[in-house]
Length: 449
Ligand SMILES: Nc1nc(=O)c2c([nH]1)NC[C@@H]1CN(c3ccc(C(=O)N[C@@H](CCC(=O)O)C(=O)O)cc3)C=[N+]21
Image (spheres, rainbow, N blue to C red):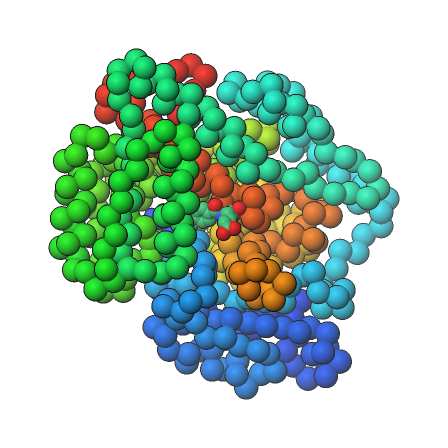
């Protein structure tokens, strides 16, 4: 199955809703408690599948890619965006149909066993040589193994900040050494609010570390040729070391054709098929690794999580996250399984994992019961759920029911503040290493990139 073509069947959506603790059927009592709110994004703006749900007692929103609802399933990209915003696992307990029922005693002992794998209690050697004293301090707090277990929070924001500081230092070194400043060009087509926000954030991040940013904003109705012309221009521009075409592109454009036009040596997103192809081959290395999966791996490394020989499950198989994440994990010698919309027993498979990377784009899909005690959980999902309390009218939640997962996992990334900031840090890192490669500037021993 191609993720691009994935529109979940209504039965799958129902399964997800149930898995997330929602209740859809008979029994008013259950219903009252479940307060399920589901949003189904129809890639064609056609609510046909969603309409099955209208007959059910859940509140459904049908979204189109043009909808003002931001950030829908960024992990899936455009045509494939199908997101169920399900009952929040912070809702009253009865909505959680899959509680963890284990005695405190046994849970503790299981933790002690698993912690020994996840945390070589973070000795300095477990952390990459780039770790600053500041960092090692925060990372060295080991996981509390108490009766009231709570996962260590993998602080993506702090790691990203540290990486950005390292990058800024390297950029000064490069500028002083050879008078070159790395440049990143971002092409944005159309006026999606979420894309505009992402592009703005990338620009700010570039400025903060000393990368020069270039921007091409094209109207929604631009032709493919116009986009290709801009790419050709940036390909030829020696001050540009990285080119990023913000996804998703408008529907009338051929994403593959456009991404293929980016010069391989400037493909800082790592989406070029040759880069992805090399990622999948033994003994080959891509010029660039896609930013989000690279950020996930960096978090695992910096928190001293051993990958070799471990069982890893990746949920979702998009071109930009799930697939490259699985390829990276297997390159790091994990045994990987991929869970997707056709997987018959996702809970059973996910529960075997020592490391879970979830990139499904479905809010609260992964419940506590999906997680093996002591597993490390990386949550890539950035799903908006309505929240009247929030100034934006929504808040972001991950694919993982954080509250439940905290009690089972040994470490977990929060949303926001987990993988998201790492994606941007990796983009800066890829841009810096591109500039270094193009200008043959020596990689600093301690530099990040
Ligand atoms: N060519 C291309 N490359 C991408 O890498 C790419 C893309 N297109 N299209 C959209 C997705 C999404 N994406 C994110 C980057 C940062 C955050 C991020 O920093 N998130 C913050 C929260 C932001 C907020 O609060 O609004 C966090 O998780 O803490 C999220 C999502 C990159 N993408």
